[in-house]
Amino acid sequence: MNDSENNMQTNFDWQLKTFKQLSTDELYDLLKLRIDVFVVEQTCYYSDLDELDRETETLHVFAYDRGHIIAYCRVLAPNVVYEQEAALGRVIVSPEYRGQKLGYSLMAKALGYIDIKWPTVSCHISAQQHLHDFYHSLGFEQISDMYLEDGIPHIGMRRIVKKIVKEEQNQTIT
Image (cartoon, rainbow, N blue to C red):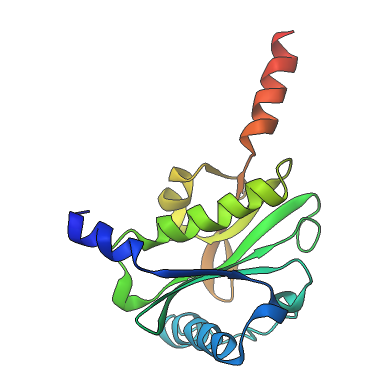
């Protein structure tokens, strides 16, 4: 990434909000981005509104650039979807912003929040299979064979918290 791209990324307006903190415009923007990418671009017809957005501890992580939403994901608390694990979902970068490493910035915000809020839990993601290397570079390991989710190949992946790994290593050594 060149200096100009680095400068662009630092100017993005990053937000971390619960459902109740979202403005009507922010909610509209994030839902439109999700539908534009997951339903229209990927021709995946499914009901996006699954009540998980409203969960008390669900966090919506997103960025704006010059008034347009450009990246989004949601963070789900442990035990909402997976027992004893936080989860990430609806991970999106707007088509116009792909190729700028924005996904890494988005994941840094989301995973940083998880590490602070729930420092002793792992994080689970149902990842589109073609993104295996991206998530693996962030510390996720594949934990399932490929399966179809809404007609798209996915894999289960898990990121073990570093603190837990260190504790387990210490117990093994002693």
